[in-house]
Amino acid sequence: MTARTSTTLSAPGPRNKVPIEEAQTILTSWNAILSSNASANPPVTVTTLDLSCRSWSLPVLTVLEPALMEIAPTVRTLKIDDVIASLPTEDGFATLAFFNRVFHPDLAECVTDVDLSDNALGTRSLDHIGDLLQRFTESSSSSSETAQLRHVQGGRSASVGEARPNDRPAAPIPPSR
Image (cartoon, rainbow, N blue to C red):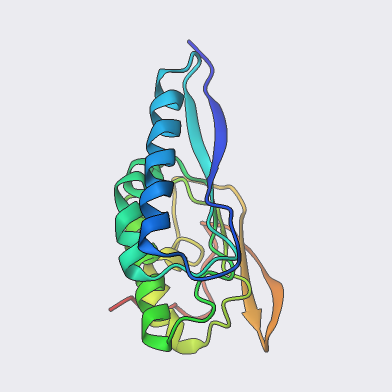
């Protein structure tokens, strides 16, 4: 049996709104990386996705969706901190809903670490990321690993603790709509 190695897929750049044209360039680069990873010996899987510190609107994320859907089943760490900065509220909610859909527990069951810090999330955001966060609050017999979840409270980034998939929540997170 051949061991699999892992890597991080990211889109570094200036801290600004990512334009569609750049998203197309990122997708081309990612597709080349994913193709190379798949043919490597041993095969390389993407276990970390880092989109932090850039603003990602829904139209831009839609360009990246094919690659994101391809890696979703192997991603363990999802770094989406500071990804809705400078977006209007409804656009920020749409971005969060996109991540909620693509990294839904049924599609991305390996995710154990989600970094949402510096997104100035309020309680209304929970309506848009409920499925993504549900893995940290629901009972699950498939894993006993500890998951980390970071969130922003009062404008400060902080760890809100550990959640084990087998832990029962004090109060359920509302489902996404």
